[in-house]
Length: 564
Image 1 (tube, rainbow, N blue to C red):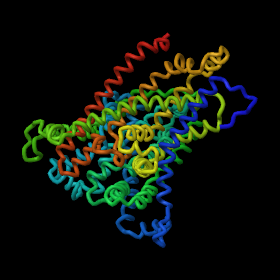
Image 2: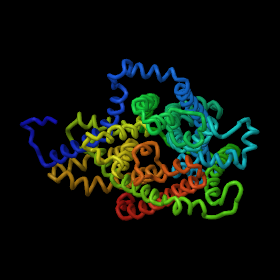
Image 3: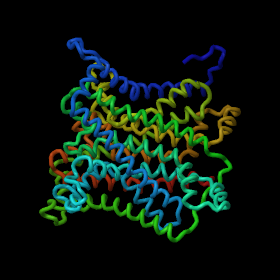
Image 4: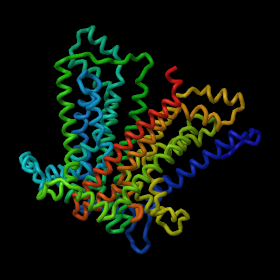
């Protein structure tokens, strides 16, 4: 960092420079270095072997039918899920935004349920519905499927797990519409079908493509669902886990991680380009579109949305019911045997405490680090190059799959010569990894909130020679509280259900509840795994209610000026 000698170094500049240095160092140590270690393991050449170059290993990989098949399977599943989820979520979002159907709030709330549950819950639910001893196995076979284990099970479970992510993007896209275009079309006597294909769809094309990119990325990088219902249907995510944990082949595992990273980087780049183009299409003269009542259309939308909501409730309620069944399917009497088994006999209560600890620390320290990074970029003067670098670091985690990030952590922090080796297998490394994993989305929300605050506050404070931290504490922070609560809620809920990144870096002492689900399922204790998944969902729901109450209390005390 070069500062001209003639420039006066004020206390405010020193504070900003110090915080920028610390934030940059944080990203270098916990984002750049782990990722660099992954690439280092890919390109490292072992002198003991004549052909150990990355090109040779890549060729050797593609010559293995089983591993090459995993790549094809991953791409096939991701593409199929994307093609199915986009039209379903679009129609659902269309009903929420462009109709006057009843019970919109209820359908919207039900559609967000998968956010509160680990993705493993949908896979476990399918086992009880369509598994070898499932209650609807005959129906599944009637549809032409032999078993839920394999591609069909992965696709169905992924549809449930990623639905709210896709829906939120499409809902936002359909909400942003210019009513003037529809009024002009009505004046010209344009039919509803033509308005849909000439106004609605073209206006939503960027949102649809963005949603498709998100669906594809979430599916191809997911680890939990293929692990539960994949059976012999291998995908890249399970290959990475087997190579890293089962075979301890770090070089080959890093290579497969690279193959997992490439689609994510590709979709991220397209999505970033689309976001810029989409933002440019919005104007200040746009008029909000208000849906008009149409009994037939509203009932049609209500019927479709209700059907999807019922299917989602069925996916949720089945594991809740099964968790209380004594011994599925032979003894269907209700009891607490499964909960007693995992919490007392298996002594897994500490995994729940660990999960709550992880979620709490992630939310607390996450909002501090994210807010400081966003504030430095949006609300401080000078250091344009460092700001550009920080923005790049802040957005990069969005393109990094959790498995790749976890591999980077195990390779970087597990090195004995690394001074940070003491963090390995501690709760601290789990918290840091989780913050990095979910950094980008939280940063975007916080950055947007700070951009909406008039820069005149900083200008006036500067002219009055007010310390920059005082302005931050008395003006910027209170105005940003609603967004910070949303960010804390987002971090807490995701930390409760995350598994892909932390699966490589936990220890027996820091084992998490989501990881315990996988271990219980591997041990054949599906009932115990189900009970643990239900506990996570219940705790996430309770946390959601807590944050809603906290938001109401804090906003009532600190945001009265908004109503003035």
